[in-house]
Image (cartoon, rainbow, N blue to C red; front, side, top):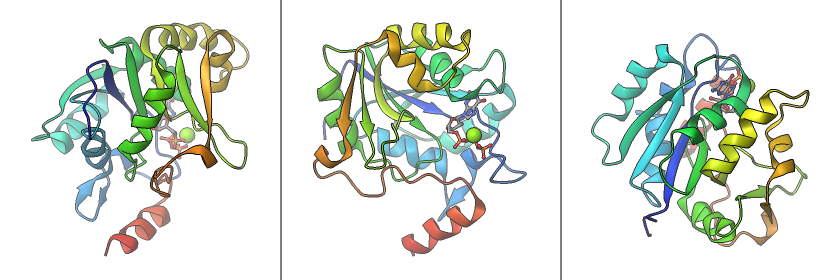
Length: 207
Ligand SMILES: Nc1nc2c(ncn2[C@@H]2O[C@H](COP(=O)(O)OP(=O)(O)OP(=O)(O)O)[C@@H](O)[C@H]2O)c(=O)[nH]1
Ligand SMILES: [Mg+2]
């Protein structure tokens, strides 16, 4: 697998994991490895640098979870917490130095770097590439964006009535990739760990 010079990673971890319970799912262990560490290890297939978006109080635990990783880590802290995924994507992308970013939520431990290879190929020359799942849902938290225009669009959209990530695409040229057109991407790439049951089910599969 190739590490692309103009692609950086962004890991979204600023949510409150309310469905998960009292603890932060970002650092919850799946078969002994924190979820966020699994995500960064997977991103290493396509990039050597990531920006982690989180709240200030999460930083120390996340730093510990990522210690020893070969991937260069920087932190983009939410200036205002709890403004939703759109805000997190915007804050993360604003800290990116490269033209494009592979954005992924911290709770998707099986994210397949092959997906990002394909999305990056589609995104080049455009403002991003996002998968439309078979049920019609756009997978905006596992996507490739051109960092600067998408960061700006997130900021603008946050000030509007519709603060869905999708609303930020209105002013951009984001390519839609149909799930059925993905090639050789792991079926579990989009699986997210939202609840303790999800974590248990994922752990059982890894046994
Ligand atoms: N910066 C930031 N990121 C968020 C926020 N809400 C969700 N996210 C991120 O967006 C991604 C998808 O969100 P969810 O799966 O709903 O995670 P969550 O909001 O922490 O969990 P729930 O409280 O159970 O919904 C995760 O990577 C979250 O870290 C937020 O208010 N701010
Ligand atoms: Mg949420």
